[in-house]
Each structure stands twice: as structure tokens, then as C-alpha cells.
Image (cartoon, rainbow, N blue to C red; front, side, top):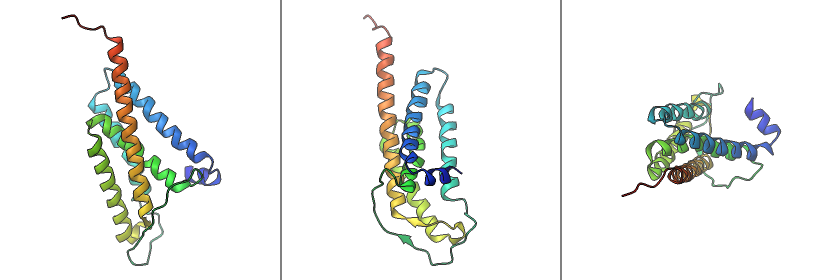
Length: 173
């Protein structure tokens, strides 16, 4: 249903991507400021953010491909009206954002996200019963979404930490 709405109203796609990014930053800021939100909460949210990744990439579509395993090799940059590439950006942004807040290891999160996306594309290429198409542009945009998520998490952590430092009185030594 969401895909149909976005396909019918392609101008909403950049707005939705912005909404995902803003939602991550607001949620991350609130979690970092809260003394109750620890690794368990971030871990749970990270797990939940992976559900759409699995559902939209590995759940069979019901239409089995009969052609040989192959992957479309192309590298195109998303435009503001392109639904699928921008959706791929948005798909990997929340897990990368939450993973970075949880682990504080930005480069590792990007590497894991890029590897996971490559594995997803490989599975789509060699498991025809999924009914999904492997495309290198999907890997590129998924990885770019992860990079954006990591950058937003690093920025959110830095800004939230600064504000907390400004509120706390300096210790006298």
C-alpha cells in the first residue's frame, strides 16, 4: 500500500525520506537524553528496524523467476522523483542510525550494512523462488542510506553530548 501511494505520488518520496531521517534524529536525541534508554532499548529498536529490510528484500513475492541467476549491473544516482532508489536509501538509514548509536562504531556499521546489502542482492540473484531482482544500484543506494544514517547518528550523538555538557555545571578541582 505504501509503495502504491509513493508510486502514484512520486513527489512524496523525498518528503518521506526526509521524514525518516528527521524521525531518526528526533528519536535518537530523545533516547540519548533519557537516562532510561540504554542498550536494551536501542537493541530492540535496531531489531525492529531490520524487519522492513527483511520483509522488503527477502520475503518471496509470489512470482517465481524462471531465468538464470543474474544481476543487473548498473550504477545510477537517485533523482528526487525516483521511487525505488530513494526507498532503498530510506530502508537502510534507520538500522545504520540505531546501530551507530548502539555501538559507536561508525565504520563497522557501514561495512556491515554494505556487506548485508551485497548478501541480500546475491540471494535475490541465486534464489529464483524469491521473485526478486538483483541490481547493483540497490546495493549502492542501500549503502548510501547506511552512510547517511551513520552520519546522522554521529551528528546526533555529538550535538546531544554538547548540550548535555552545557547543562551540567563544570566541576571544580
